[in-house]
Length: 67
Image (cartoon, rainbow, N blue to C red; front, side, top):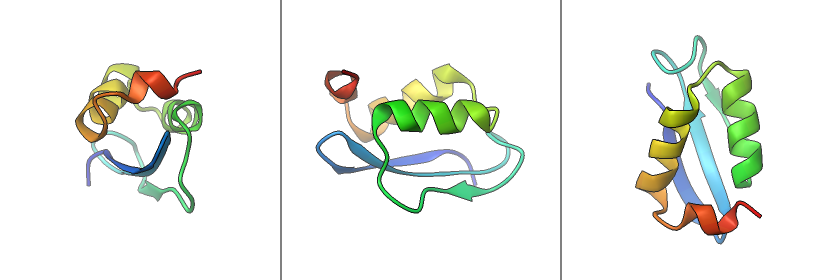
């Protein structure tokens, strides 16, 4: 399983990740904000470019939710 981010609502995202993007499998148990997505995935060892790319694929306007 690679990184998967799905738009859940306005500014919220469901996330799952596993090898090769992270050493272990992980899935959010609730929708996360952009800041929470970055915090959790970087803690799991994911590269910020990969996170940004996955967010753009899920929601081209995700940067509007960064505030």
